[in-house]
Length: 461
Image (cartoon, rainbow, N blue to C red; front, top):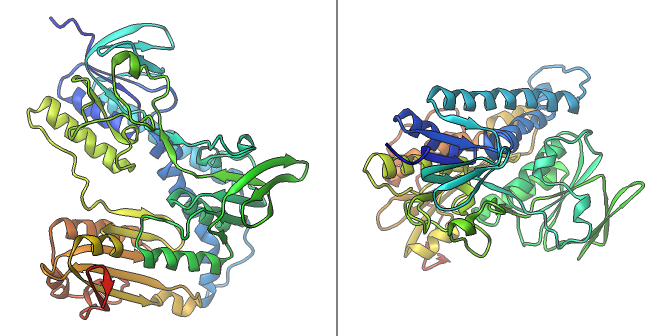
């Protein structure tokens, strides 16, 4: 009989940890999973799910405006922030229950406690002080917002975590950052009627996305009334009777009811006992793993944001399934990080998969770039001045489509399907031979027959 209490002990009840625990338990393994806060992790509890619900809420004012162009008369409307927060909380509680139900249905032990490593096989349950031993340990504790403690007055600011639980909707907000979290919350708060300013140290928002989409979204956000201050940073935040006063490097003094810092995320490894177990971390505190998510300690694995690889929920779930194949099915499997579809739930939305024009130009000798910018059909009657952008990046030698990028309504939905297409290795000829579905915005993807321009050795020709 095994001297271990469990075959597998998972620390962290987010998407990656729950998937690893549930599937391992369904295979007949003795499994326990510990979570100190709520099951569901960043995505379900304080990330993509509540954020998307807030995105929906923030879009309705434009829907009401658009309706008039289609013959509808919409009466006076009002928004109740507390009602939205309560509805969101109820849905999150329901989803958390489903996560627990899946674990219990697989006969995993669900522990609601902080867990810390004592050594490579021993875990201490902090609520009771009990220690248990496990043959294999998975660390899936995710990440947390960087508090930017070097900023004087950072304690007066909130992170994305607190944004979901504000007691009142502020009249004004300043959001520091230019990544997808900052951009999405800027659109959310503006859509809910909050005077919104985005301040970012870089030259343009969304640094890792295709340049055309970055510029297109920036212009659309400014046209809506969002103030964007690039090439600037917060220097100090102070609190007074009338709210918060912000000193900036290049734009003087700003006033705000709330300041949200969206300046990156840190791996959640502090106080986990990694040193006691001998687990190596990098300079940011992220757990170092090999191609199979194994740490330098043979029986300890790490999944998801705590490893600082690709910080996306589906990636953590994929890593968990690769762990199951490797550890329990005698089928060593590396996570595949190529061609991951990604969305920014801004307004308008961004959906992208594959290489940007800039990245592809460094990798391929010659590119064909197909680009369309147009007014969507819905906007012709609504009167909205928005524009959609669709862009395909093609390796001229192989004709393979190596990047697809969309700015506009339902871009994320289209990017998911394009992910299948690019993963299958489809060429531009395959796109050309596909019949268009009319009238849709997506038909532009299969009707751009001539390249808009070419890139050779990184230069447009």
